[in-house]
Amino acid sequence: MEKPVEPKKGNKNLLIGIIAVAIVVVLVGTFVGLDYKNLVAPSTSTSNQQLYVYTGVSGPANSEHLLGGCVIAEMKGGSAPPASAQLMAYLMNPLVQKNCEAATGFIPVDKGSYTSTPSSSVPSIYSPSNATVTVSYYTSMSAADQSYVSGVISNFEKTYPNINVQVSFITASSIVEEVSSLVTSNSRANVVMTIDNLDVGVLFYDGYLARINPTTITAGEGTISTITNLNNYETQVFGGVYFLTQLVNIPLVWVDYTALKNAGISQVPTTYTQLMTDAKTLDKKYGQGMINFQGHGGASTPTEMYQWMVQFGGNPMLFNDTGDIQAMEYIYNLSAYFSPDYKTSYWATYTGLASNTYSMMYYQWPGSVNLTKLGMKMYSSNDTVANTSLAAINGGVFLRSPVSWISEWNTIMDKAWVKIIESGSVTSYTQIPALMTHYNTDMYNYLVEFYSQSVANNYEAGMYAPVEGS
Image (cartoon, rainbow, N blue to C red; front, side, top):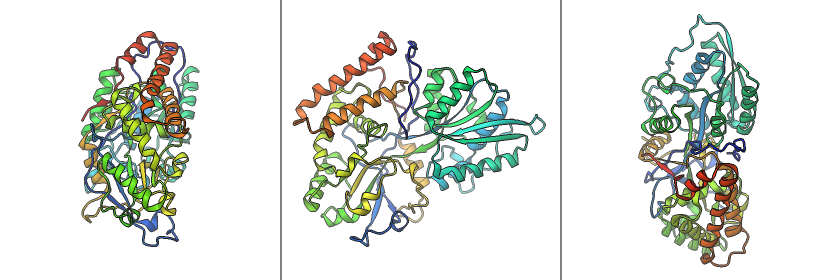
């Protein structure tokens, strides 16, 4: 995920921001095994290394987990909205989603994707008798997924010969720039986009998205209940649905289980108390910190912090909620056992597991990597990653706070991280409450300057809290 872009400055009426479409999962209980040979070349020091993935620890106040991913939306003003809707319906089809999971690791959102024979039928929206039109499709999926996406679009054009699709693989921020330029120039282009959930809010609040009908686009068995809840929430807040969850990414913890066993740890930690104990044990065994964290900065570290603060019962947007402070204090203490790699780790980081520079990676987003090609499998041969992920998604959800100023929050949270965790200038966790209050004030002042006093007051009153909809 790249750092999101901000809406236009000076719009004072953004009392409610974007839903950063995120779903949360509860602990599934078991953890998933990785075929190490398909992940990276075997380490020279541990030829029989066992790598596993599981859903991580359960917080003292909340066991749920934040998800990321992409949404699908349509630019307003297109000359042929039914043609755009036809493409969206095709991309949301159960069989296409199932194949997408196999090719990219992103989890399907349609219930029909999890059946033994996913439906290949697509609602008929743009008639074969209609005129031939062109639809531009912008996607922020990674370069590794281009071959798969191109194949899907090619099959779509064979099925709908009167709809030509021009595909552009560009960043989410570039999608925002392109769509903004088209709308402001009164373009009649038909544009569909698959865009990171943290960026679509800029387009929504600038009025650049068309209202869509999720019932038509996701006809058939429909989306799983937690995704339907997102649509309902969007309708309640925005007065309609302007984007749909398309690609779901589940945060997981990656573990070198061999290193744990060699240190006398027989099972992965499931509570923060156990994690701290194991961190100390690993440090003593290997002579350095072995817990890795996405401390790279940008959107990475703030996303991690959001997850942890919610699990401690906090409201991450405030910075100085009681749970926020407790989470930062815990991580400050845990950071004594961080691997040196934490300052450079980012999405799809895992090579330190092979080189033995860390034994646990908290958290990682497997949609950035191809889970299926990595050989993900459950202990039970009758289970699948998709089924496990579905059970996790159905277990419970919370949404990232629905705000359009998430980019500035990311920036301030990065400052808090550098000051408290990375700089070495904080010598005791007792300094943390005052520092977090300082960052709360920074966020408040930003909202006063670029939004309104009312928004700032609502912020300070805790209005922009995580949305739980399980």
